Image: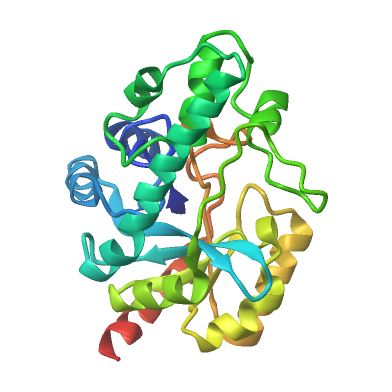
Length: 285
């Protein structure tokens, strides 16, 4: 079984690297891509744990990017990247710092709204990671009895993005994301294969033509947020532009938007082998 999209508590999964890989082993996953947001921290540790458990760890990343031409978000997976590559760090470290600062501002706004939580309580949930995510804030609010779930009415009340009317959540703080073209190029520079993650989530289909010419090499077909129509759209684009088809659970543990298991979106060995071959081709360029 193959899972090419999975997170750990280095970013926004509730489970540690060891817990994630142990669970993958128990589910029968043989090849697992660790793709934490905007960082390669923990990949050396993941590789060691994977070897000890008999799970091949594919070093990866998921870059939180933005399509400035169409004014929408886009996530780019980098598979088989070089961990701690300086180009990755130079591009992504400022975003990681901005996210952490924005989270502090969010907590301050939530406190002013009358919710009794502290920054220290939130920090305690991400000691091993790169900083605070909204899921950590929601986890504290859940522990305090303000909600019974991570994603629900309270999440929308606090963090809803500004809509066309300008209405937004009472603790929404915008973040300047990375240009999607920079994300694609830096992944290639770091020796990786750039993959468009869950295009259905942000409706990125119309941009694929442009991004292929910028160096995009794959598209995520199988994803928990994709329905059959999304899968079909992604497959058609993959065939049209000679893109590698990938799939993954996007596993976040307790912090997932919907229940799903590691290995639940298995792309199969035919496409996985094509990914390996594409990686070899890129390394020769």
